[in-house]
Image (tube, rainbow, N blue to C red; front, side):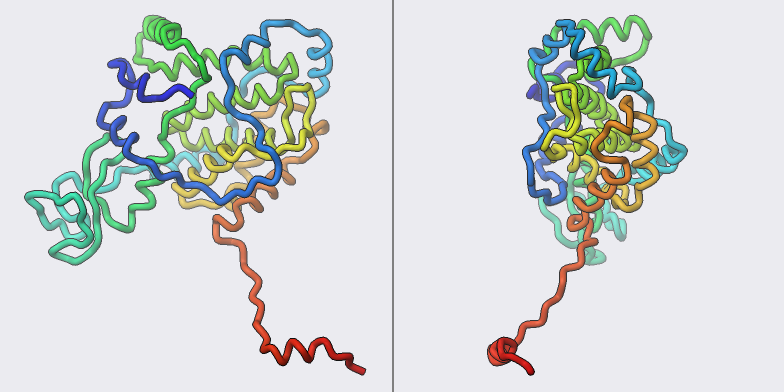
Length: 341
């Protein structure tokens, strides 16, 4: 997979080098504990796989029509989108103090040690780190450590199609800037390039490839901090994966949702202090507005897929209540085997 750092060294990338360096420092991954029961749906693709879309196949095309209602990339349409956008805006607000002051009591420090556990003034915990919005080094309250990790997690590099020609991508980026007169990144060019293949993937019945293309586009939304929109698209991808999207012009493959999709959903919800049980209506709105497929031909309904998502995050979200069993004394166990008349 192409490394974001290779691209970001270009002077024309949007984010500052301070943010790039800070991203490289953050290694923690926030994710639910998901035990694979079936093989995961493959998510990443290469340019070689896109070459197959050049060959027309009338039989595949006719078969694909059974499942399709549309072949266009649709925009997320939900009355809940503004509310979710507001939640993410608040969750991604800047944390920390840039003035070398304790974030609790504002005690000033002339020099900041590498590791600080408690303020010398108020005794409360804080630490030094860089924040994702601008790469500036700040002092952050200890209780905000988890939120800071989640903020970094959710602006990790966007994935790129493997084997993509960066020179061609750069030329496409330059054309975008000339056409619109505004600043564009390589990821903007990548987004538009990927979008061109969506209809071909659908018409050829390569539904799993379509999912991958949608994933790359969704990654761009997340990386661009359009978190609510990205969440809606990740929900849609979860639905397609759960229904076993296949490149054999069918649904129903015996596979599981790619763990990366589940992790993206879980991490975004954690940052916004939400759980899957808070998102039922937004989940349904997202799939209904984004799908290009006929619901009647899908193995699982939206409700069944939502229930599967909620169940998969049950333990990670702290909703699973462990059954409590009382231990019995050895002599009590022996008594339980005696016949009672």
